[in-house]
Length: 125
Image 1: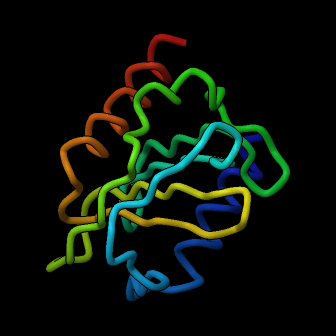
Image 2: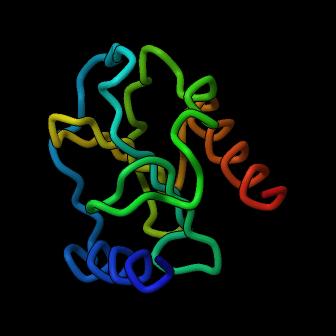
């Protein structure tokens, strides 16, 4: 599992070293149970703690998706335009394959609360 997660982190880091996320949603995005596949959080561009909940590339994350669902805001807030390349990333992936990326400099407060809850659960588990 650690190898798969490390490979995923390496893939994300190598895939785009200039942090060019896909299209940024122009509005908040509502979601329903069963539509979120995973939530991934990590220090960017590298760091000691990478957290995954749900199904990441066919592998289960360290955290169960059900353990964090109550902390995923609904609707998801619009990402904040970024002015740096260091910090923490949070990526929400839908079962459709669409992703919403937050960070690295700033995250909406509700997304930061989600990231902190993921860290708390990982440390207590």
